[in-house]
Image (cartoon, rainbow, N blue to C red; front, top):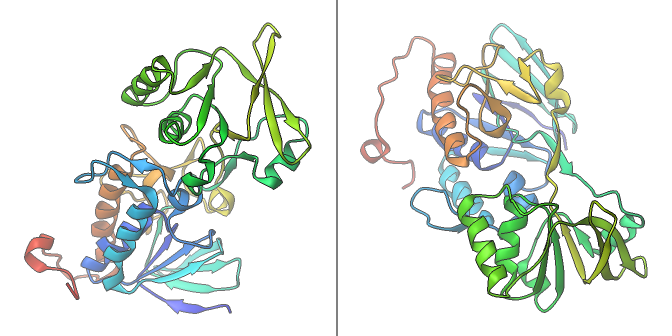
Length: 337
């Protein structure tokens, strides 16, 4: 059922950074509505790697993505945000300092400020050009994300790719599955520590490395996979027995309707002023992976910082003429805590 809601801040994107923006706005007594195209909160953490450990969250040496999302939702809960899930914002219009947003479900939102925390925008996996791929995708034999790690226990798993996702999942699955990593060259794009651990695991015989190879074909009955055909650049081929192929070739990014809102765009990202995260359209802010500025790092922790800066920059729009006296959370506390 379509909703008509008036709020202080409309947040586009319910990933970790969008959820933390609810907390930061709430601490400044600003109400939030959060809109996301996915059916659940958490963004890529929920959709792509819920059981993948994240190592660079302060005070958490390691935390699974789904646990991080759950804790962020708990942190935001005292401020009673409204979540509109399974829909995306289609239009944005500003009149007299008030933004009207309409969604694909027919909702109408009115807000004093807008925060775009849409991560990579509309995203999907880059698929390898392999014959018969769709049938193996439908059966789950070929995948681009790991929902539940234990589904691969005792299975033969081929992991293709050279980035963090490929390396991290190879290290995570090696203790429960027979893992083969396929990459076109010996150098990996993953974090140096992870790449070093992968090399050590391969030396110890815990992981098989197929280098330099690329995906060439799939063997099986069209649904159940029996092997993955690999090829060198010279055309030499070999087949690796496999029950699953995990292909980690990154995401294709598309801004969708956001690209039509008159914002400054730089290579599929929204440009912002670093000190406030405000875009070229006054009252509209961008934080997290979708935002870009000189020195930007695509880290969740930097997105958290941007959420705080944006919230403080928004406060004068919601409460014009009201002085904001900065207080630490340890001093003022959190409602209901």
